[in-house]
Image (cartoon, rainbow, N blue to C red; front, side, top):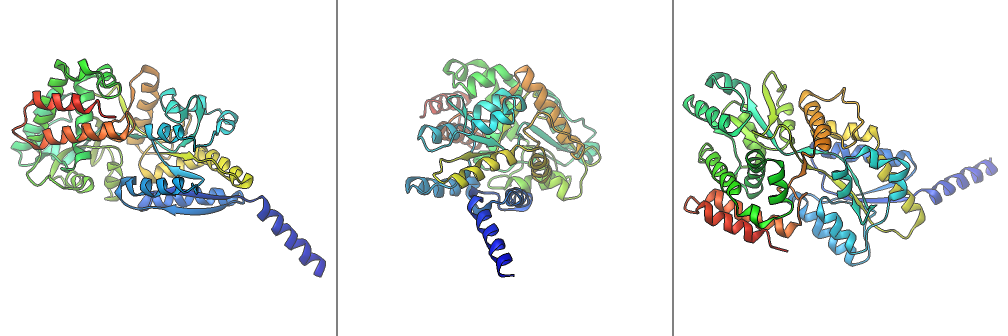
Length: 412
């Protein structure tokens, strides 16, 4: 019996020796996000690793980034942190991120991800992060009851949008549900820019920051259309949270909302079904384009071999079909992998996935500037401020707004 106890103890010690500790910094602290984090934790624990949760709530991730910076500066970086977009390259340039090419090559990530997404996950050609999901930003959400009452049809271009808005207004319905916060103004602007200007214009103006494009006639038309949208919002919009705006559409108090696919979670939570109760459609004029917002985990350099093994297992788990399905069903987004079975997903997700694949092939897949995927935070922040000022200041001219945006685009 004593010998069996010694053997059992030795087995436990051997497992402990080979198990790694994986500390993960994230800001998934509510609802389906927390469920998704728990699923990832369970996957790593099943491989024998120790999960050390490092959740930082609030600030849309800003709080988490503040904590992360202090940890990295003190030489105590977590194994992985939720970071996205150009910020990945900024961290990699500091020399603190790990190369996970061995995992990516073994699992053929280059063939599973669209090049435009894969490139965001790389620094100087090497993978330094694992993508979790894809949010589509250029969505229009519509109340079927409100449109039926107004005798209107869901718009496919901006001319139709304003016809529908007029019909909704005459029926006593708020045409556009909007939350008057800077990032929501920017989200609306992004969809207007893509729908009015097209993909090439969007890339030149809001990805490449091309000055002649930013000061040209197409941008003038974009800004005029954007400002016209505001006239169909209600006077209580300033300061309203996005989910409260979505609730207005759910209740039929408002007809439409321009918002990313996280809004779908609100409809589903309210017991509403796509097609029957609400319509999910590409924002006007953007059916052949897709503005993406991809969540991802950056992998930091570690000194302990067991922890490094756990880190690589984490990267592998994130890209697994099992986790991609569970996470995205909870989050309302779609899998970033291109070969996923979507049998469990709803019609909105299937439409999003089909468009994701199609735009990845035709060049219509573009990064969301409003959600930190297109340019650095300083530049996008300066442009967001300029756009929000234009949205809220009735005395500000289109010409002045255009000049301010072009100037903001030079911010480094």
